[in-house]
Image (cartoon, rainbow, N blue to C red; front, side, top):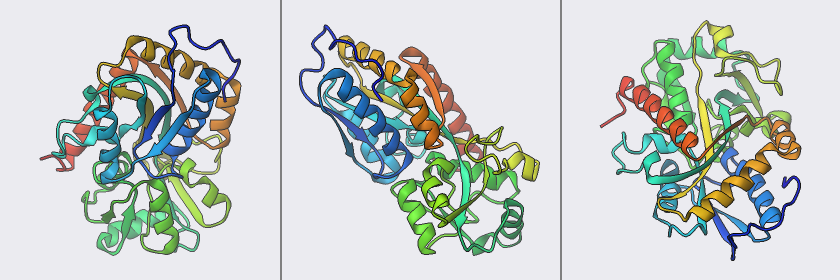
Amino acid sequence: MAGALPAIAQSGYPERPVTIIVPFAAGGGTDAVARIVAAGLQERLGQQFNVQNLPGAGGFIGHQAIADAAPDGYTIGFMSSSVDGYKPLGRGDLNYESFTPLALVNFDAAGVQVRHDSEFETIEEAIAAIQANPERFTASASGIGGPWHLAWVQLMMAIGSGPDEVVFVPSGGASPSLNELIAGGVDFAPTSVAEARSLIEAGEVRSLAVMDSARMEAFPDLPTIEESLGLDVSAGVWRGFAGPLDMPQDATDTLIEHIEAIYESESFQARLADLSFGTRWAAGDDFRTFMQDAHESTVAVMEAAGLTE
């Protein structure tokens, strides 16, 4: 994933291994993309970039650990849009302003996944059943107020159902949610289609629709919510690298430079396309502006759903 290898940064950073905190369980989309970039940084910069998974509380534990780390550039994190929900939910003052923004690299739309033997063959069938008897069903994907939960909430409100009429079971991330789906513990998993891809290909999971403005290149037969139901529902998760506030400028500049080189490499783009992950780039102040806009949109959805304190 490294692309063409330059000389080690003249600043001397990094002079020892770097830890990348991932606030979700291994095996999910956040973990997968973080490890791809970590491998590229390790190759380019000649130091180990060790991924440390710290799941729990809908990603709050890991995100808090990123914000609380020593601001020396040797502990950074791969954060997600889950951070937008913590402050509105009353989990403290943690939000996008708690971090030094480095680089946005990924955006994935939410999908609606069911088990392979589900009674539902189409999203239309699933939504009709939910509208008739929402309390009969359960869904799971990361934590309350997280991006997949909010994607589900947006869909439920769009179909005229209450945001909590379908019982939502929070988990440590997409991977445990999909495992619970396979085990029969829940009926729906509104994770990204990319995170469910291996299970879809293995015949364990079926995706009914994607919450985006266009169909996915990797799944051209998978309809959007808009074309299936006539509802404009677009929702997903962004993921990017950040560190604690007040990181050294040389470390910040070095990380942005090399993450951008990895992002632009053909190997990285091909790898994410192969995994069905979407790409999106913003760095430094542009990434901060992106996070601010995303935060404001998330708060608006949460307020409409009555999820804020």
